[in-house]
Image (cartoon, rainbow, N blue to C red; front, top):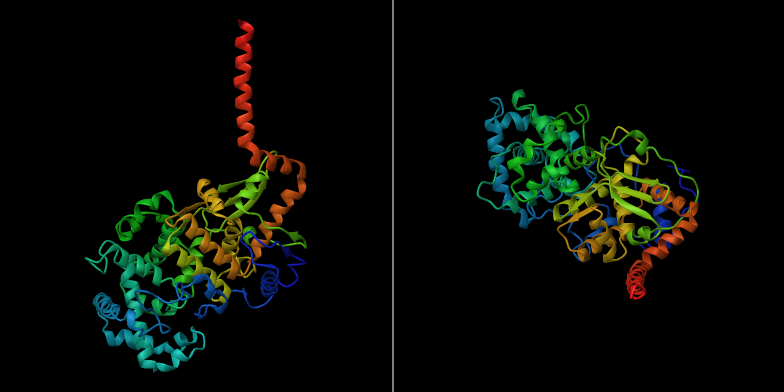
Length: 455
């Protein structure tokens, strides 16, 4: 990354931080804020991003329903789920090729040192002996696998659909993870014909599509149990990255959404320039139309120049309480350097940060939110005001990703290349109503004059 971002100045206002904040974030692009992705540790939520939660700083950090892993283990408000987790473990053991709980626990104990090493140094981990730590991994890992394998027989029969959504939200929190090593070790005990790993990968990929991209094939899933249709769609996802080993489920979610992105999409280079941000309405004023990308990966962004209009294409996004938490935590994963990827380029390490920063830039007023909805770039169960507030907080705290600057550069190139046409577009956009009224009046007057001449 060093040397790629040169003399970039970001305009104050529309979805971007002030000059001092922008300067700090640009420096961090060459430092530790968005680090090269490789190590795959399970970090604590970055302190610099806590403000994204607004008045509730723990909104995207602390689970509300179920604790997974050591960071939030034992919190009183999560205690009720411990009994359910134990039931899930017993159900798992019952299908584990004749292995006993002691056999499975012993296997986990043999890798407990490596599992501990997957977590960032934290005082919380010192509270657990190796035996207790392995027991916690056993219970939490079995719970996750049972939850994802149950298909049409949800683990929580008789519970509200909101319970399923709460679990889905919690299991993709940065601080609420177990290492993939734990799941991998547990899956060894299940019969091969169950195709557990294949189903886990498909589950994560499909719920990602369901909650992030609002695909037509998943619309029914949003109003019915996710388990009732989840395994009937997207069969091509079953082969998703067979040889790829994620760090954890959150890492798998992120990778499942971007793995089809072509290498050239990730490997962009910047040249020095002065960049000005633009809201959705401002882009429309100068002749840049927003369109929903049809790319098969999430986070797609591109700028195209036509003879008359320009086009900013973005992946369509579905925003609700679940997907908002996932988006924030995938960005936090990138910011902490805890994701894994086969591509070590700086642009691939900040795909989610870049995408969210561009969308945040487009939102300056509620009118901009309406514009994104109208162009089918944004689908949301939140109000325009709530959506605007969410992305305002994103813009204030999230570091700019590499591809964010690339998109801004392309937009500014469009502006600078056609100043006269942009000015004409802006005039017509602002005064189109007045022009329409004048033309209507003129048409009426012409009709009247014609009638008078015929008398």
